[in-house]
Image (cartoon, rainbow, N blue to C red; front, side, top):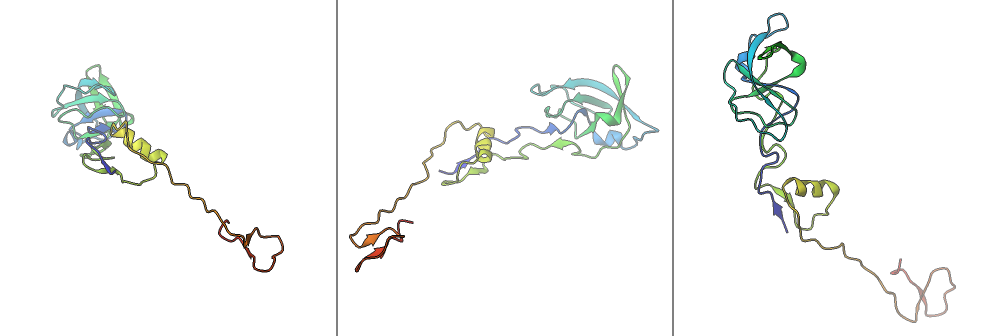
Length: 172
């Protein structure tokens, strides 16, 4: 049967790299010679959503794959930053909204068709089923077909034909 996703994959917007979740507008004047300094308010790791709201003038350290905190609209990669103090980060590059963020449902949206009835279950389709939390699917084996050639007149190729005989072409 057709199987549709009941969830978004991924189920949240996430960081595409290690860095700092920011409000992109805060970085509009950042450059290597004149970095913007933002207050560090949180450290966010994979599997641990942040309860912090990133506001203007603030940032949150974030690991690749970690859920994007509320208020942030970009991630500046760690290579474009430096610690200014234990509570502040220098940003050396301008960020655009959406930069380095994997959006929610980028892979599969809730309601999207994951597999169609009669699709062959390849490794990638099985992975897609796992990604949407599916543990069971109804399957059937590929049918096997056999042809049985019958008749006194049918003989295997390679033998001499006697009067009234024909070679078996259906078997092959």
